[in-house]
Length: 124
Image (cartoon, rainbow, N blue to C red):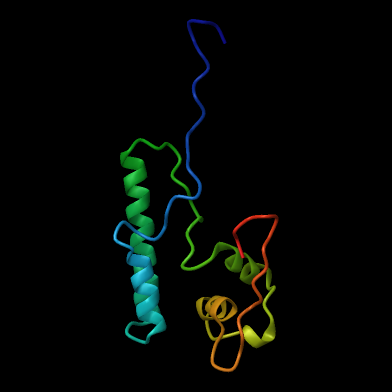
């Protein structure tokens, strides 16, 4: 390109945008669901509202390419295990969400997956 027509900047995006919500809405929704004070539909609705709020906020700030499919109700690595079918039979539950929670937190009579430190990170 010539000096009169500089190369345009590539579209900007962001990965790893916080998903918990400005007032920790996701944490509260998860705890309410786990305690039996709310339903799975209410938890899913909270997640949908947080995603939409994030997309609108980032677009309003001028982000050209808002991130898509980066949200997780609990843990994106466990979401990937579900996607790939890498779930021990003992953790399979009625919904993908409950299966994910069973792997992470365990259930009555079933221990959670073992915590392992990966690649010298703090991710277990």
